Length: 305
Image (cartoon, rainbow, N blue to C red; front, top):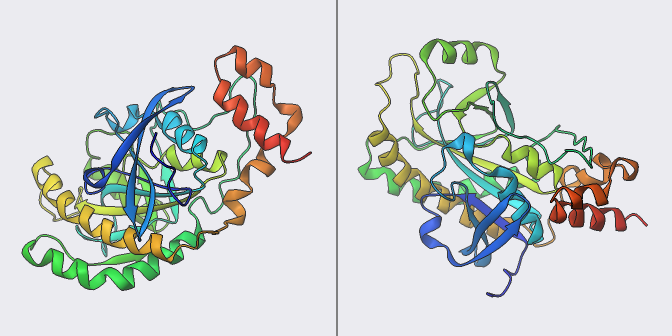
Protein backbone atom coordinates (compact mmCIF):
# COMPACT_ATOMS: atom_id res chain seq x y z
CA UNK A 1 0.00 0.00 0.00
CA UNK A 2 1.38 3.48 -0.87
CA UNK A 3 2.55 5.72 1.94
CA UNK A 4 -0.03 8.06 3.43
CA UNK A 5 0.04 11.61 2.10
CA UNK A 6 1.87 13.99 4.42
CA UNK A 7 -1.25 16.06 5.24
CA UNK A 8 -4.80 14.72 5.72
CA UNK A 9 -6.41 16.57 2.82
CA UNK A 10 -8.20 15.57 -0.33
CA UNK A 11 -9.38 16.94 -3.65
CA UNK A 12 -12.71 15.75 -5.01
CA UNK A 13 -12.94 16.45 -8.73
CA UNK A 14 -12.56 15.04 -12.17
CA UNK A 15 -10.99 16.24 -15.42
CA UNK A 16 -7.72 18.07 -14.92
CA UNK A 17 -7.03 16.33 -11.61
CA UNK A 18 -7.67 12.66 -12.33
CA UNK A 19 -4.94 12.71 -15.01
CA UNK A 20 -2.42 13.73 -12.34
CA UNK A 21 -3.45 11.17 -9.71
CA UNK A 22 -1.46 8.00 -9.06
CA UNK A 23 -1.18 5.12 -6.58
CA UNK A 24 -4.88 4.32 -6.32
CA UNK A 25 -6.02 2.07 -3.51
CA UNK A 26 -9.43 0.55 -2.75
CA UNK A 27 -11.17 1.73 0.40
CA UNK A 28 -14.05 -0.43 1.62
CA UNK A 29 -17.01 1.47 3.07
CA UNK A 30 -20.46 0.61 4.34
CA UNK A 31 -21.84 1.79 1.00
CA UNK A 32 -19.40 0.17 -1.41
CA UNK A 33 -15.75 0.30 -2.49
CA UNK A 34 -14.09 3.58 -3.43
CA UNK A 35 -10.88 4.19 -5.39
CA UNK A 36 -8.70 6.88 -3.81
CA UNK A 37 -5.44 8.05 -5.35
CA UNK A 38 -2.67 10.49 -4.51
CA UNK A 39 -2.01 13.82 -6.18
CA UNK A 40 0.73 16.39 -5.68
CA UNK A 41 -0.45 19.97 -5.21
CA UNK A 42 1.30 22.85 -3.51
CA UNK A 43 4.43 20.77 -3.14
CA UNK A 44 2.53 18.28 -0.96
CA UNK A 45 1.05 14.88 -1.59
CA UNK A 46 -2.66 14.67 -0.76
CA UNK A 47 -5.53 12.31 -1.51
CA UNK A 48 -7.59 12.47 -4.69
CA UNK A 49 -11.08 11.11 -5.22
CA UNK A 50 -12.90 11.15 -8.56
CA UNK A 51 -16.49 12.07 -7.77
CA UNK A 52 -17.97 10.07 -10.65
CA UNK A 53 -16.17 6.79 -9.96
CA UNK A 54 -17.95 4.82 -12.69
CA UNK A 55 -19.36 7.60 -14.89
CA UNK A 56 -22.44 7.83 -12.68
CA UNK A 57 -24.90 10.61 -13.46
CA UNK A 58 -24.84 13.21 -10.65
CA UNK A 59 -27.89 12.01 -8.74
CA UNK A 60 -26.52 8.45 -8.67
CA UNK A 61 -23.02 9.29 -7.39
CA UNK A 62 -22.26 7.26 -4.25
CA UNK A 63 -21.71 10.33 -2.09
CA UNK A 64 -21.90 8.50 1.24
CA UNK A 65 -19.24 6.01 0.15
CA UNK A 66 -16.98 8.79 -1.15
CA UNK A 67 -17.04 10.85 2.03
CA UNK A 68 -16.79 7.83 4.31
CA UNK A 69 -13.72 6.64 2.41
CA UNK A 70 -12.02 9.97 3.04
CA UNK A 71 -13.04 9.92 6.70
CA UNK A 72 -11.46 6.47 7.05
CA UNK A 73 -8.24 7.98 5.67
CA UNK A 74 -8.37 10.68 8.39
CA UNK A 75 -9.00 13.44 5.86
CA UNK A 76 -10.12 16.63 7.60
CA UNK A 77 -9.95 19.10 4.68
CA UNK A 78 -11.62 18.68 1.29
CA UNK A 79 -11.20 20.94 -1.72
CA UNK A 80 -14.10 20.16 -4.05
CA UNK A 81 -14.18 21.16 -7.72
CA UNK A 82 -17.48 21.26 -9.59
CA UNK A 83 -18.35 22.24 -13.16
CA UNK A 84 -21.44 24.45 -13.26
CA UNK A 85 -23.47 26.87 -15.35
CA UNK A 86 -24.12 30.58 -15.22
CA UNK A 87 -26.91 32.11 -13.13
CA UNK A 88 -25.62 35.62 -12.37
CA UNK A 89 -25.11 38.35 -14.93
CA UNK A 90 -21.56 38.97 -13.73
CA UNK A 91 -20.52 35.30 -14.05
CA UNK A 92 -19.21 34.07 -17.41
CA UNK A 93 -17.87 30.79 -18.72
CA UNK A 94 -14.26 30.58 -17.59
CA UNK A 95 -14.93 32.22 -14.23
CA UNK A 96 -14.21 30.47 -10.94
CA UNK A 97 -16.52 30.84 -7.95
CA UNK A 98 -15.51 30.16 -4.34
CA UNK A 99 -18.93 28.97 -3.19
CA UNK A 100 -20.12 30.17 0.23
CA UNK A 101 -23.68 28.83 0.28
CA UNK A 102 -25.88 26.25 -1.40
CA UNK A 103 -29.56 25.90 -2.22
CA UNK A 104 -31.51 23.16 -3.97
CA UNK A 105 -34.81 21.65 -4.96
CA UNK A 106 -36.01 18.45 -6.62
CA UNK A 107 -33.25 16.20 -5.27
CA UNK A 108 -35.26 13.00 -5.10
CA UNK A 109 -33.08 9.95 -4.57
CA UNK A 110 -30.16 11.72 -2.92
CA UNK A 111 -29.52 10.71 0.69
CA UNK A 112 -28.18 13.78 2.51
CA UNK A 113 -27.23 12.22 5.83
CA UNK A 114 -25.55 9.31 7.58
CA UNK A 115 -28.37 9.30 10.12
CA UNK A 116 -30.49 6.16 10.02
CA UNK A 117 -31.77 3.47 12.38
CA UNK A 118 -29.10 3.39 15.07
CA UNK A 119 -27.93 7.01 14.99
CA UNK A 120 -29.36 10.51 14.90
CA UNK A 121 -27.16 13.31 13.58
CA UNK A 122 -28.23 16.95 13.82
CA UNK A 123 -25.40 18.74 12.03
CA UNK A 124 -25.56 22.52 11.88
CA UNK A 125 -25.23 23.87 8.34
CA UNK A 126 -24.41 27.49 9.02
CA UNK A 127 -21.24 28.31 7.11
CA UNK A 128 -21.44 25.03 5.15
CA UNK A 129 -18.32 26.02 3.22
CA UNK A 130 -15.22 26.80 5.28
CA UNK A 131 -14.60 30.54 5.59
CA UNK A 132 -10.95 29.90 6.38
CA UNK A 133 -10.38 27.75 3.32
CA UNK A 134 -12.15 30.31 1.16
CA UNK A 135 -9.65 32.93 2.32
CA UNK A 136 -6.84 30.70 1.05
CA UNK A 137 -8.69 30.27 -2.25
CA UNK A 138 -8.81 34.08 -2.56
CA UNK A 139 -5.07 34.37 -1.90
CA UNK A 140 -4.43 31.58 -4.38
CA UNK A 141 -6.45 33.32 -7.09
CA UNK A 142 -4.34 36.45 -6.73
CA UNK A 143 -1.25 34.32 -7.30
CA UNK A 144 -2.81 32.35 -10.16
CA UNK A 145 -4.66 35.01 -12.18
CA UNK A 146 -1.82 35.67 -14.61
CA UNK A 147 -1.51 31.94 -15.35
CA UNK A 148 -5.23 31.69 -16.03
CA UNK A 149 -5.11 34.74 -18.30
CA UNK A 150 -2.35 33.11 -20.33
CA UNK A 151 -4.27 29.81 -20.40
CA UNK A 152 -7.39 31.45 -21.87
CA UNK A 153 -5.55 33.34 -24.64
CA UNK A 154 -6.62 30.83 -27.27
CA UNK A 155 -10.13 30.34 -25.85
CA UNK A 156 -12.20 33.35 -26.94
CA UNK A 157 -15.43 32.00 -25.42
CA UNK A 158 -13.92 31.99 -21.91
CA UNK A 159 -13.41 35.01 -19.69
CA UNK A 160 -11.02 35.44 -16.78
CA UNK A 161 -12.75 36.08 -13.48
CA UNK A 162 -13.06 35.03 -9.85
CA UNK A 163 -15.89 35.45 -7.34
CA UNK A 164 -15.18 35.32 -3.62
CA UNK A 165 -18.54 33.96 -2.51
CA UNK A 166 -21.85 33.12 -4.11
CA UNK A 167 -24.66 30.59 -3.91
CA UNK A 168 -24.49 27.34 -5.88
CA UNK A 169 -27.96 26.10 -6.78
CA UNK A 170 -28.06 22.30 -7.02
CA UNK A 171 -30.44 20.50 -9.37
CA UNK A 172 -30.80 16.78 -9.95
CA UNK A 173 -29.89 16.67 -13.64
CA UNK A 174 -28.45 15.21 -15.73
CA UNK A 175 -30.42 17.49 -18.08
CA UNK A 176 -29.82 21.23 -17.94
CA UNK A 177 -32.39 23.44 -16.26
CA UNK A 178 -35.13 25.10 -18.39
CA UNK A 179 -35.28 28.91 -18.89
CA UNK A 180 -38.32 29.70 -16.75
CA UNK A 181 -36.90 27.81 -13.82
CA UNK A 182 -33.67 29.74 -14.04
CA UNK A 183 -35.56 33.03 -14.28
CA UNK A 184 -37.24 32.12 -10.99
CA UNK A 185 -33.92 31.14 -9.41
CA UNK A 186 -32.25 34.41 -10.40
CA UNK A 187 -35.15 36.24 -8.81
CA UNK A 188 -35.55 34.18 -5.62
CA UNK A 189 -32.17 32.69 -4.64
CA UNK A 190 -29.98 34.99 -2.56
CA UNK A 191 -26.71 35.82 -4.33
CA UNK A 192 -27.24 33.07 -6.91
CA UNK A 193 -24.05 32.72 -8.95
CA UNK A 194 -23.99 29.28 -10.54
CA UNK A 195 -26.16 26.23 -11.11
CA UNK A 196 -24.81 22.67 -10.91
CA UNK A 197 -25.55 19.08 -9.99
CA UNK A 198 -22.90 17.74 -7.60
CA UNK A 199 -22.34 19.64 -4.33
CA UNK A 200 -25.44 18.29 -2.60
CA UNK A 201 -25.31 16.06 -0.59
CA UNK A 202 -21.50 16.06 -0.60
CA UNK A 203 -21.20 19.19 1.53
CA UNK A 204 -23.79 17.90 4.04
CA UNK A 205 -22.04 14.57 4.47
CA UNK A 206 -18.65 16.24 4.90
CA UNK A 207 -20.10 18.41 7.68
CA UNK A 208 -21.58 15.37 9.46
CA UNK A 209 -18.14 13.76 9.41
CA UNK A 210 -16.40 16.88 10.75
CA UNK A 211 -14.53 17.64 7.53
CA UNK A 212 -13.79 21.25 6.52
CA UNK A 213 -15.06 21.69 2.96
CA UNK A 214 -14.32 24.28 0.30
CA UNK A 215 -15.90 24.29 -3.16
CA UNK A 216 -14.52 25.88 -6.31
CA UNK A 217 -17.20 26.17 -8.97
CA UNK A 218 -15.97 26.23 -12.59
CA UNK A 219 -18.45 28.05 -14.80
CA UNK A 220 -18.38 26.19 -18.10
CA UNK A 221 -21.58 27.34 -19.83
CA UNK A 222 -24.23 30.08 -19.93
CA UNK A 223 -26.91 27.56 -18.98
CA UNK A 224 -30.14 29.35 -19.98
CA UNK A 225 -29.08 32.92 -19.31
CA UNK A 226 -31.18 35.32 -21.44
CA UNK A 227 -29.65 36.08 -24.83
CA UNK A 228 -26.89 33.50 -24.50
CA UNK A 229 -26.38 30.73 -27.09
CA UNK A 230 -27.91 27.31 -26.35
CA UNK A 231 -25.85 24.92 -24.26
CA UNK A 232 -24.28 21.95 -26.02
CA UNK A 233 -22.39 19.10 -24.40
CA UNK A 234 -19.51 19.62 -26.84
CA UNK A 235 -19.11 23.27 -25.83
CA UNK A 236 -19.26 22.34 -22.15
CA UNK A 237 -16.52 19.72 -22.48
CA UNK A 238 -14.29 22.13 -24.38
CA UNK A 239 -14.74 24.67 -21.60
CA UNK A 240 -14.07 22.03 -18.94
CA UNK A 241 -10.69 21.28 -20.51
CA UNK A 242 -9.50 24.83 -19.85
CA UNK A 243 -11.34 25.70 -16.66
CA UNK A 244 -10.18 22.51 -14.97
CA UNK A 245 -6.57 23.51 -15.63
CA UNK A 246 -7.35 26.93 -14.15
CA UNK A 247 -8.75 25.15 -11.09
CA UNK A 248 -5.54 23.12 -10.81
CA UNK A 249 -3.53 26.36 -10.78
CA UNK A 250 -5.69 27.80 -8.01
CA UNK A 251 -5.78 24.68 -5.86
CA UNK A 252 -2.04 24.21 -6.24
CA UNK A 253 -1.57 27.57 -4.52
CA UNK A 254 -4.44 26.98 -2.10
CA UNK A 255 -2.83 23.82 -0.77
CA UNK A 256 0.45 25.68 -0.49
CA UNK A 257 -1.19 28.48 1.55
CA UNK A 258 -3.26 26.22 3.84
CA UNK A 259 -1.28 25.54 7.04
CA UNK A 260 -0.69 21.90 7.90
CA UNK A 261 -2.41 22.53 11.25
CA UNK A 262 -5.40 24.34 9.73
CA UNK A 263 -8.39 24.25 12.07
CA UNK A 264 -11.96 25.19 11.24
CA UNK A 265 -13.90 25.53 14.48
CA UNK A 266 -17.35 25.05 12.91
CA UNK A 267 -16.48 22.07 10.70
CA UNK A 268 -13.97 20.26 12.84
CA UNK A 269 -16.20 20.46 15.93
CA UNK A 270 -19.33 19.44 14.01
CA UNK A 271 -19.48 15.86 15.31
CA UNK A 272 -18.96 17.02 18.87
CA UNK A 273 -22.09 19.17 18.75
CA UNK A 274 -24.31 17.09 16.46
CA UNK A 275 -24.00 13.58 17.92
CA UNK A 276 -25.40 12.78 21.37
CA UNK A 277 -24.26 9.50 22.97
CA UNK A 278 -27.79 8.55 23.99
CA UNK A 279 -28.83 8.75 20.33
CA UNK A 280 -26.19 6.29 19.10
CA UNK A 281 -26.70 2.51 19.11
CA UNK A 282 -23.42 1.03 17.90
CA UNK A 283 -24.66 -2.55 18.08
CA UNK A 284 -27.67 -1.74 15.91
CA UNK A 285 -25.41 -0.07 13.35
CA UNK A 286 -23.16 -3.12 13.22
CA UNK A 287 -26.11 -5.49 12.84
CA UNK A 288 -27.37 -3.32 9.98
CA UNK A 289 -24.03 -3.50 8.15
CA UNK A 290 -22.76 -0.06 9.15
CA UNK A 291 -19.57 -1.31 10.79
CA UNK A 292 -17.42 1.54 9.49
CA UNK A 293 -19.90 4.17 10.62
CA UNK A 294 -20.06 2.48 14.03
CA UNK A 295 -16.25 2.62 14.29
CA UNK A 296 -16.15 6.30 13.29
CA UNK A 297 -18.84 7.20 15.83
CA UNK A 298 -17.24 5.08 18.55
CA UNK A 299 -13.91 6.85 18.02
CA UNK A 300 -15.67 10.21 18.23
CA UNK A 301 -17.47 9.28 21.46
CA UNK A 302 -14.24 7.93 22.98
CA UNK A 303 -12.66 11.39 22.64
CA UNK A 304 -15.22 12.71 25.10
CA UNK A 305 -14.39 10.36 27.94
